[in-house]
Length: 414
Image (tube, rainbow, N blue to C red):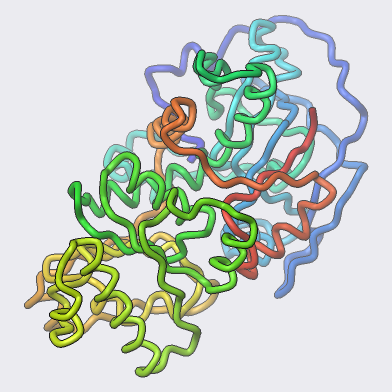
């Protein structure tokens, strides 16, 4: 969320000073003229740049993330505009116009979500800014799938200068800085959501964690952080074609998981579910170095995962989740399919087995910055594929249809 800390209000509302604008008269981006049941993004080259008001700046965007949420917004949400909508909420850019403070010019800044929150209500102080009753959505034309945005400076975050300076062990520093920018964008929304889900699950070193949707934008970061930071063993679950593509492209899957099981197709039938559980039993036993013979004869929840984190967008991924974890296990839901979908758990299983079920949405600035630090230090390296702005519409459509791998990043301008 583009929330802000009251302690920093003074420095983020600088005094006024004169400045001349050298911005172009028009710029390009993707706009939804009217939301409908299908994506109808229009690539426009005649968008106007809104002049900044008090406390606002104009940012020239360099990179913007592709998030499935944006596709859902473009298909219509009750609390969002239904026409002339520009989506996109995670970006990195440079301030090019700041009538209120010349010292802000050329500052590299990042955005996370185009809403503001009060930071003082019951929900904000409990780290649930998404539920803030005073939340205000920005104008429909403020999304980041365009070349320029006009936003209040207090809702941006300057990118720490150290993040743009690679460690001394890295060669070709200039090229590396350029390469790291899209990696940092992956941390703004997907990375923060991944870290928050792990903090919610609270795994211990050596635990076995199932990550459903492990090859997606959030899921692959959950897997990386779980392995590299938390020291847990990850069983990845995702669509079979993604796994085949991973091998075809010779991408190291060990970065995101220790074992992989193809996801069940929808609708979920008993035969497919039983086969999946047998594969899960064997994977858990192998990771725990248990006797595989015992597993094949005594398949019970006692030998399954300690936690499951669902980042997938398929309805089948949310069925029978209680079967995937051992007693006392955690079920954390991050992703969600579009349309009606329910997580149903038998009450006796919930009580007798003392299971925990928790939703996990977004994450905070602190979590975004922490993931950026891990990226800068080389602890994790997100899987990103960079596309030009002209190709962003097709990429967002593929993202909505679950046809993408890793995190899509739009290269907007140099």
